[in-house]
Length: 584
Image (cartoon, rainbow, N blue to C red; front, side, top):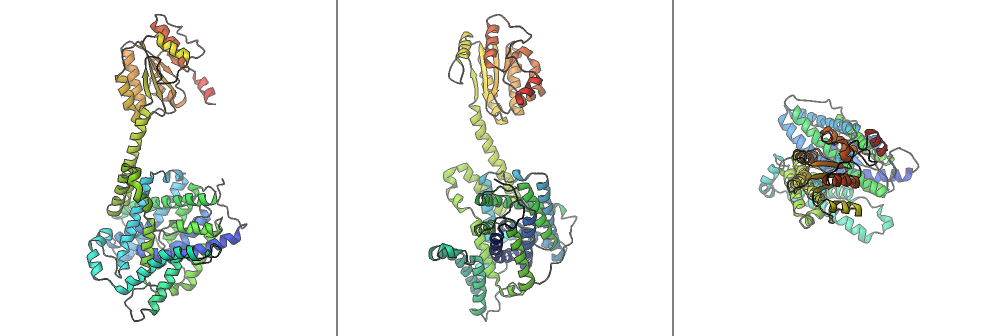
């Protein structure tokens, strides 16, 4: 696999065609997301251009298409709604919202510079699924007002849910019909194309989003010519965007920083998950840290010029790859095509009905919901299903960051519990030559010779903190014995809590006059025991690398004679120099 985002022109035809196709898809989506966010259609278009261009230029995924997405739009909607109400004026609130986009971009750049990209998506699928499904439900709910021909009620999700009755009473049949027509085209067109159009011609068929946008607008112009009350986008100003000066409020800064963290982290997750999809389709490997830097620069520039935030878009990326794109030239081409449209044909958007854009955004929300896992989550695991449902409810009705935080916390607790139960089975106490662990014939013979006076305490696997309870339980159940052998040969990692549990067992054995041997502690295990002072409790010749030699010494001890105290055995515990040789 290759990790690259170098721009070259050896695949120019495929990249240009991929960029053109992605631009056609991006146009209606950018308009819909811009309007849905509350920033306006122009903000959606500039977000698509700026995020897309700079993420392609500086990112780490060659074929990734970046633009405003459903999840990012949901967060932007909440940020704009809050700041335009709490600021001194709506204009100041909007400027603060664009500042939040800039801050989110800076956060992404910092995460990439600190090389934290690989950790961003380390979340349980139940949490990711619940989070994305919750965002999908939010997007659907927020479009109910425009879908029914009215402005979205104040109060966001709760306000919309509480006013559903009023929305239905005041429904505008014309706009609702346009919205239903839009959704019908988006749903039925792909099915009809697959069934009726030959595969070699399908790539020339325009995407359903563009068809729905054009058909909805034409129907609104000619089927409802007398309906002046149909809400439309209005003309978008042509020319370059106005520079947005970063605007802060002392009373709102903490809230803005939290919003930027949410927006930035969501953008990281959204982009890197899409990068994984791109990798699977192109058999390449993206650079997650470089991608975060590219996404951050894109969002910083978007906020600076009045665009909404964006991230990697799965639909645009997949179409881009399927139509032949292989390098970042496709993303740059897409951004430049959209720029030409904005500068030269923005006035054509004046007649697009808001209901059509609401239908497009509502369909995006429906597609974001993880219906496949929702249907069978309870069959896979009741606990996993409860986590997912809980994250959905918290995402929709409480807060995005709270939902992810609680979801990850609970999922990790359950995972630790399961791992601890599994690892607890690898904590064994052995006093005779049974089959609890694999032993050589000599070891079994030595155990039998001890007549139960030697206790072999065998640990294996990572000793995380959840295993400490099993160590203590086995220690408390230990029968009377004269010698304790702690075998750590099969332990790759020893946590602090488990180390302390082992220390308690060794200290208690010493206090009762028993002899203690430690076997197989090297590397991290040895350093941990040294730092806790456990090794200093024992004579040097009681530290071994070989369990058989430890058993020989233990048998000698219980039989009434001691080996030489100078530890001349060839299998005695290694020195620090020996450790270095072993590690090499």
